[in-house]
Length: 274
Image (tube, rainbow, N blue to C red; front, side, top):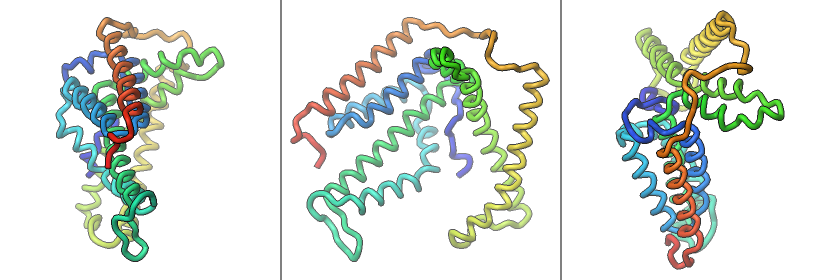
């Protein structure tokens, strides 16, 4: 399960998405996430599906690799599906047994919310798959630069986010090593009920936290040894510049959002799902 977590990891490839300016990918991802809540009918889902498939093809990230990252959140998807299925009471009753009631509105809401969550995680993961942590830092800092005028520490915020993304694969690898070491010492991490499994995680979490704090302390000492003093007066080794491809990407994303709004909200109600 630990190896299946791909959030925050960079997948090296030679694609159009990898070459795009990180600011374009950040803005496009934000607009894409907003667009997931702007449509109400099946045509909106169809447009979003076509757009997402096209982006996956352009990224050259294997579809199997993307789906592998969905495994750790299957429990969250299942819980969301069940809550919407049994707690939404709208429309005709389709099933009733004891305290469990499934209605037409509950079934529709559960399915659509699950699809939206899958699309949301897949789309946001593509940004980290195609953008290195350094590029993400530069892009966030550039987009938030106007906040410097009101004394917001933009560089420090971007640096914190970059370090957090860098630590994700490191901590996952460290967790895998600790779990293997504990299993080799006779620890049972699989059997038992939920409470017993939670207790068995204590021998893993304690050394993991110790290792994380040690790495953070080493990083802080390394930054101080290199005279790091924040973002004032710092220059970029690779300054960000928009190209024709970046401008085209902006136009395509805006066109997609407009299509989702027009097709997904303005189509007559008889085209709705169910």
